[in-house]
Image (cartoon, rainbow, N blue to C red; front, top):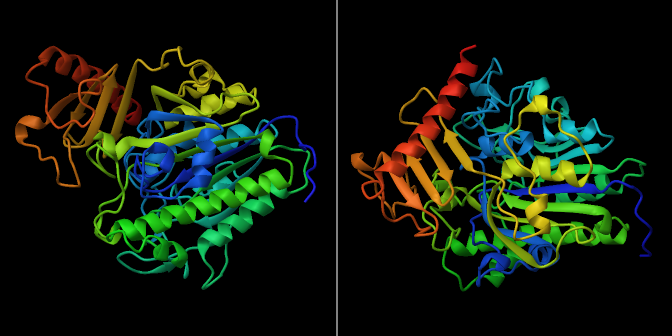
Length: 444
């Protein structure tokens, strides 16, 4: 197919967010048993981050932070959004007053689309079309069966496939294939406007339903790695299809592509108690340990950004909003008070320092003294109420404040609190001051 020139002056933007993918689960991030050539190509044609963090170790708070450029506590989302039958008044979800990435791009002349998983609210004003997306195709809740498109949980089991706010039915059709079709249609739409597409891939989140050919390919791997690997390679093929489609329609060179996982891999029963790999890092989904919040992350835009380079700076998904804004010449009003920092200077020059002096994480209600939290300053990281869902690390009452150092030992196997009490005091005070500000805002 003959290529045509780019149809827009401003660059298009695609943000790809996978679901429950471990830090090491790409060839470009160290996996030797996975085949992921298409996503790895994004890394070789762009910049990958080796110390990149999700803003939370669980789905909804992580997505809220990505969409707003704010820590999820500052964005008003403390845990996973309840399904509508458990929240009839619609109180759960991303507050409508928060400005989303979609609203930012839309107000600056972009067509905006969400393909995939939402999980940020169910009332009309909290659904994608109420939060800045011109077009939505996908599921509203936290997960679906990829063939029936039902949300299976503790009942009632509900069909969950929508185009905008209209329920549609495609029984028996693989959701991954439907997403690819929708992505192709959205990016190909004839328009003088550039596009912003948030492709929230609901994989490799359980249920593991990778293409049978990949199950055959990984037949020699033990379960559940085999099932998980097949799903990751299925994602990789989907990403490859969109890459080649962008190239065919002449938009690849004019499209910024961001890729990351929403947090670490799952060890839940529905995930066969594992399958993912965080390498030497401990922890997984739901944990503030590195395996729960450190994720693979890539940005590709070779016409303006370096190619085949790595950045070892610590950065966070809250940083994509200001980074993409700077790349597309969009000004974020200071009144938004986002927490993210533009990564463009350090992407362009590896000698530039990380823009963050500190980072914060929290899930659960701030008033609950047992809620999970963490704060990092430089290489030092303090975890409050630590938890390892894999069971590899165990914690006593003495570990309620758990100090680690990323330069000394990123595996976090030892609590350094007794050796460095001044660091514990400093980081604990930083966190308590931050959380007290949030409580004050909540009580106004």
